[in-house]
Image (cartoon, rainbow, N blue to C red; front, top):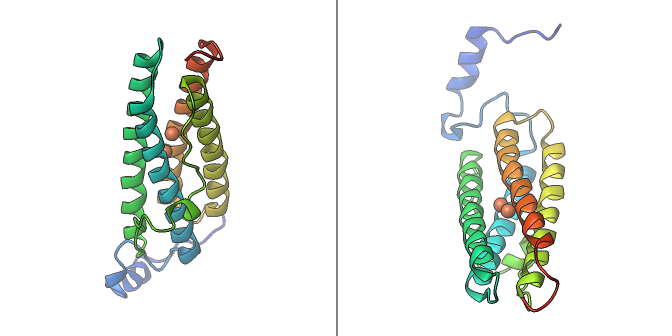
Length: 180
Ligand SMILES: [Fe+2]
Ligand SMILES: [Fe+2]
């Protein structure tokens, strides 16, 4: 409560400098290079999730396949939305979103697996969602209170990943372990 507010005139002086930096202003406190690196790693993870879910969507076979396959497609599309959000934020921070397929898996926290049956696919996706949840929590800790816009973005993504994990867990417990 005792923190002094910057005077209006001084705020304007700061704002007029380095206009080319766009949304990155004088008051930006986060480690920008490191954050861009983290966001690019998240982008690679999301791209991997897009591909894994889409692959599972087309590979799903078995008596419960229709509902699960539709869920995989829905999740794949949600992960693509996350890719777009992350890329847009990286550009706002003055970075370059890394879409290169070269080294994608090395940059990604997520793996591209192809489950042998419906049960294995769902288990794999649930594990990857849980990895993403923990990773995004760490990213939030890294940002702290230094970049509220990136915090909001990661919270929004995290919320969807928790929904995904919850939906997968519910579907998974309804399935027999084999013959799917
Ligand atoms: Fe995602
Ligand atoms: Fe997800």
